Length: 133
Image (cartoon, rainbow, N blue to C red):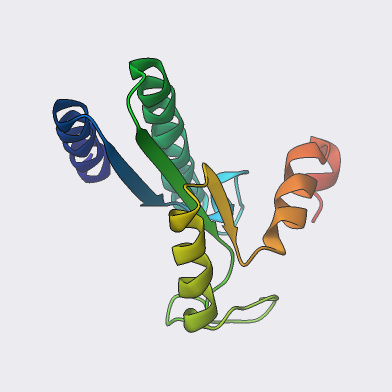
């Protein structure tokens, strides 16, 4: 509930001051459950869904309040280690793309951009296929 509390407080501040930009970091893992780390994926799905709810609230307020959901794939950090990883981004490249997404006030940004393809595939893939990969 730490994320929700902070995001809610930020949203209240933005509404009170009449503008703002909230950026949350979720993950490509927010899109589907995963057998290796279901709690991680669920927590990232919460972040993405919470941000989407705040985005709807911001739009309906009519105020210039922007909500950006950053969904990184694998970034070369201590967390992203092990076999089977692909498209691992250097932190500098990921950071540069995040800054561009923020500057452009994107609603959702896949980091690195090529993860958009994986995101699309994950969303359209039938369960019977997803459960076998």
